[in-house]
Length: 100
Image 1 (tube, helix red, strand yellow):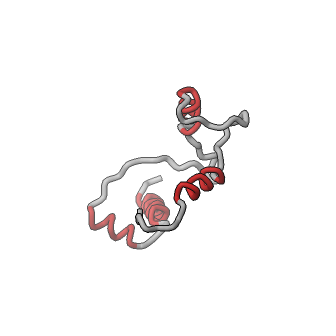
Image 2 (image 1 turned 45 degrees about the vertical axis):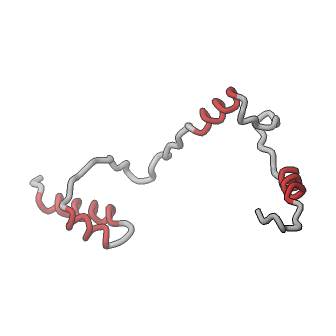
Image 3 (image 1 turned 30 degrees about the vertical axis):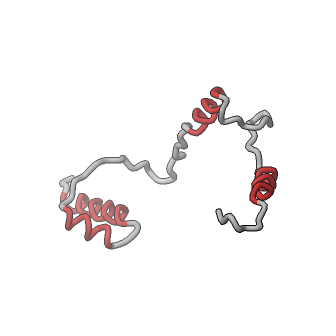
């Protein structure tokens, strides 16, 4: 800090700390980051994963496929929705090439 500053930095810090919101837990008590139980409870809550709900259309199956780098780059260059377009192209190919 500038030693010639006329700002009362101690006062600024006190006022900022007084105005800062205090985090509260579910019971309305202030969260204490030094309380091991509170930290563990927070971490456990943070680790809860969200799951996707049921799909409206038939469920798609996640898989891994390996493309040549240039092919993948060309597909991605078509913009958002490229995976959906690849799926539609593969569906059309299967319809025309698989014997019934």
